[in-house]
Length: 370
Ligand SMILES: Cc1ncc(COP(=O)(O)O)c(C=O)c1O
Picture 1 (tube, protein in one colour):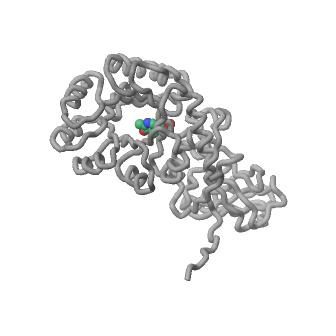
Picture 2: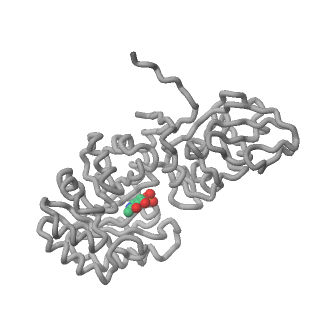
């Protein structure tokens, strides 16, 4: 007999699929000349990779970190082009990569050697150029040799070119323009598609995705698809984006505390007067950051109240003085609609990317706007 599952702990990650699709349209508006490779690695930035891919079927391709995520998408019935952004990690991945038609980023000499010796079926490669980030990719002085070796490798169906920006989230940082110049100088006379822009560059560096040459231009948005700003000083809503994830829970206790009572582990916060303190079923075991300091905003019944004391594994406490009618069972928003995740991240000394990716598997997901 199928047993109905009880509601259980009230924490939920509510995923708004309409917002996701609207954010994809915002990418198209900002980069009208480009194809969109929606970056949905890390389980779709914590939103569920298959769900996100399904909702973003209008994207031209998906970017994931590696083969596991790509296979997960294929098993979920996603037949789009999929690019493995870290490429392959060993030659034994190549048959599956070719079989499923995945494209791979090639960023290191070792990968070229493996392609030369083991590749048997045609495969599309994105040659990654390190134009200044100094993480993955061939340095400009290594580029020509890498390109020639890859081209000589019989089974490569097409070679495209990409780079990644180190500082695109700093609006006035000249390094982004320098990286664009280096990239164009190396690739302008070569045939192939190109891809430079992440969310910050899509929004702030039109030169990184303008029409160019004969190859197609691709942008690689990640965080903006989820309604979140890539810039430290600006929230997504101000950029015309819509938050996709709302992390919600409920008050599970409301305590009448007295002046001087210390709240939670370590007794780090004391009540300045007699007051009510609410206990919310959300903690770092759910992905709410333990580093969120007293004063971090939380919405109770739509009203902002400050978090008080340390976040524990399953619970956190809030000062209810601004919400005198709050009662057990009332809805609490930890971030999302009405409370930007960027703002919570700032209070936690983190970035919104970390908070979204960090929601743990025990949090049940609810979709809306399907
Ligand atoms: C290579 C690459 N391209 C694009 C992105 C998307 O970046 P963002 O989420 O800032 O748009 C990432 C994310 O880290 C990435 O690693």
